[in-house]
Amino acid sequence: QIAAAHASCFTMALSFGLAKLGFSKGSLASKVAITLVKEGDGFTISKSEIWLDAKVPGMSGEDFEKAAVEAKLTCPISKLLTCDVTLDITSFEGSELS
Image (cartoon, rainbow, N blue to C red; front, side, top):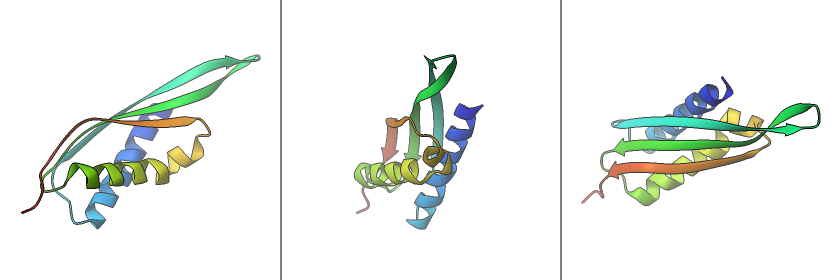
């Protein structure tokens, strides 16, 4: 359930960030995997991996990557997690504006 919460939170943060930049059309699909490791008598979350597929018409890949990294850093669930949070943009479709 933490993975689902992180995916939803990250996607909402990215969507809001893109809207602020004037990009409200397209699609975002995120999935998250949480890594648990045994620590003493219990477990701890050691990593949260975000995979992202996106289509944002009219946006450059460089600008999209900046927005995605900002969303990863500012998403409340990312801030809550004390483990390593990674982001892999598995696909992006956009285009430079002429």
